[in-house]
Length: 352
Image (tube, rainbow, N blue to C red; front, side, top):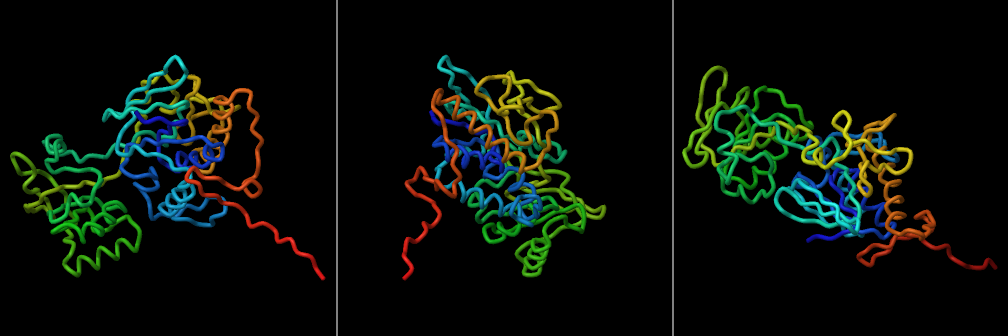
């Protein structure tokens, strides 16, 4: 059983920043996310796209923002349960909660912060016959690259035309025996440097490019042995060990919709006049997953909501104990790992 003060559901920017604000209040956090790495949409959908509305950053790459957030919260030592979906919740008599993932991992927390962005991200799956069979039991279809070493020495076919397809083609070119990238168009919608890198790898014979083309079927009785690909009206068969379709993710509220929370327009209603608490005491919702009058789905709004929520959780967990807000420039930051960050102290020296 994993125990923590605040269980955060969602490792996007709002969920990650919650760790920092909670840490200032000496509250421990653990994060659950269905994706295999922190960052939410920023990491999975557009890591190399610039964001222009983060205060203090005229422009910051989405992936770099995630990296910075991870560095900012490192001293507060958050725990992570990644690649698992929060499935069920139980409120105990002492007011704490037990959240169990679909994979059976149990977490006990004094407060729940749902920061699931637009919800649980599910892969957009190609409409191919028997694909459900090959998804199971490592039979050859993967929608996420959780462990690149799994593909070492293997023949890989990746389908897609965005950043994820380009980036994993580049990365796996140095891991797999062969990498074939299939896209239904000749043009790719990704970062220019990624497109140019794939071009270099193609010229060097490290990545095979098949465009404009589509995967239309599988061959193999026990697992994938090859793929049928249609290109310019003709068909070709490509032997492969793994097929990785990367067509983006579809957001869904997922099992959280069955937790008894008040839902409106596929989002969780909260009390924005106070602390972003839901209709269930001790459960909060922040970021794109919540809704209230005047709601704006912006990262900076999620940061604001996380800050006020953590103050409320502190007061709820420490009744009668007054917290005096101090600016970090004055108080410094004490991490759970024993580190301390503080401004340099003024030098006391007389002038002759």
